[in-house]
Amino acid sequence: MSNDVADYVGLIRAFTSGKISAPRFEEQYMAMFKAATRHFPEPIYEILNDLFLDCDEYVADPDLRDEDDLDDQQLHERATEALTKLETGRTTN
Image (tube, rainbow, N blue to C red; front, side, top):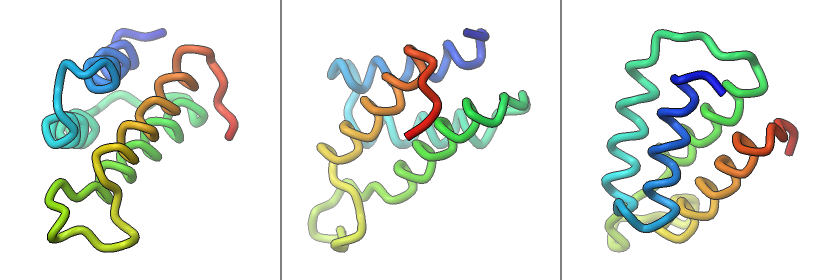
């Protein structure tokens, strides 16, 4: 696992273990993804990009959330799935 992927894994682990909140994870993950300059192999990129899209669909405030938006628990589930794929090398759905 490259250092760059390890950075993503570390952030995802911090969220899935409860060390950081969903809003903080969303903010940090989106910033990390947008600032990335390294190109990942397609299967790794797909996992990271899918989680980026999940973060984009996340809405912290329940009063502003539409039915298509993700809540804290749904984002946590998506992050857990991404982490499992990254750690096991499973890059297919």
